[in-house]
Length: 93
Image: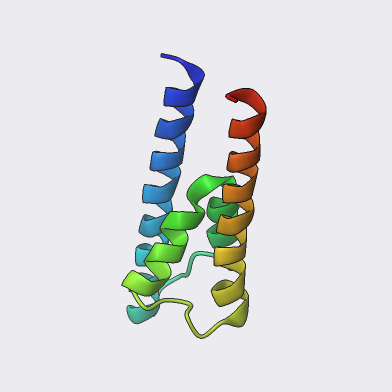
């Protein structure tokens, strides 16, 4: 399996994980249980799951009143997209 396919699989897994951690944290909040730390939510986003965590925010209406999530998650996604575009132009074209 070449590197691009492996990286695409990694990103897919991280984004599914991003949706899952947002769902899990929302569920835990409703049940008054131990919560997933915000640094973990941002960590998943920084490690490639930014689209999933951002989607999870709005799918589950979770963390949408916290400005640092409302601004931070899309900002991470935009930075990662810009980096991806740069790398594609650098290595592919």
